[in-house]
Length: 67
Image 1 (tube, rainbow, N blue to C red):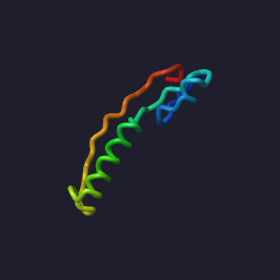
Image 2: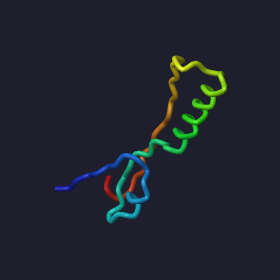
Image 3: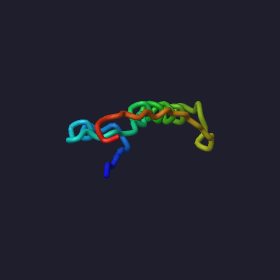
Image 4: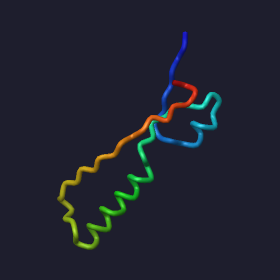
């Protein structure tokens, strides 16, 4: 029987493993940038702590040898 495996996060280990592992890249770098912007907005008074913020991110599938 064949088995398909997918991981979460675009880690280097997934690409370097044998076979390389298909992953879901959630855009951790972009998430970090957006969080930093929101924190700066809070610190500079441009946003209140109780403001609700919805941030849309589009994950992508990085197809490798396990899917």
